[in-house]
Length: 247
Image 1 (cartoon, rainbow, N blue to C red):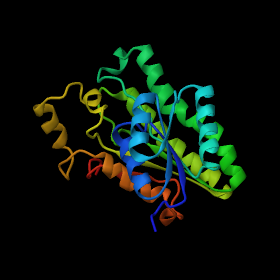
Image 2: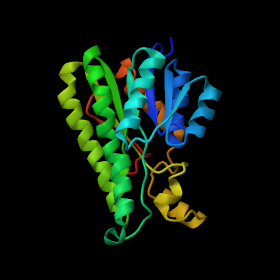
Image 3: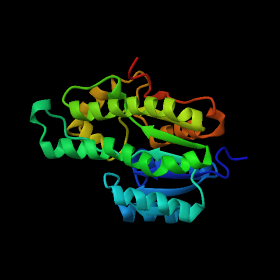
Image 4: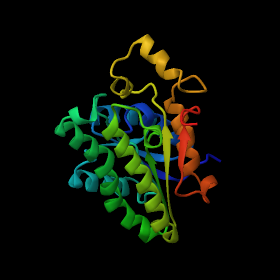
């Protein structure tokens, strides 16, 4: 039997990158998935390919998140898994030179979205006395890189939120975990590195003991385990999926 057979899930930021890898793995393992993304056309295209559902969403807006959760229940009749994957960064720069607009955007998408998704999904999980939340954080939360200070901080917040949510919601039958990927072949790679050249890639890869970037499939595999019943005794962890980057 598929590991997520009968499960339903929302994956935010699911149209591309790590989110798409998680979506593909979930579908392969039997889940019914609602792909949520600010890029509604991209989400719809992937949903059509995989036989999933899609919804355009701005995870920083209360009304948009409320509509997303309502859409999941309308489509599936229940919700078992919520993956908070949507995320953005600012370009590398001295911390005192990041614009207020970039700071606000990072906090809105990486931090406020977790609050808003919890606001609308957790009451339903409480009513069902079950549910799994997975937050996609980053190795930046535990091994910050210079010139990405406010992005680093947003992911550190996500790890602390994961642990706090886990300890509060555990008695109600709800598990909350996080995964910490290292940079990967996603649309955010150039943002993290500032520019994408063979020299910069080689320098970055030299910091990863296994010698390669994280892939969407790596994230999908880790997410599938943590969201499956195989991980029923695991809550409050931030699992590094990083090739040894933070050792």
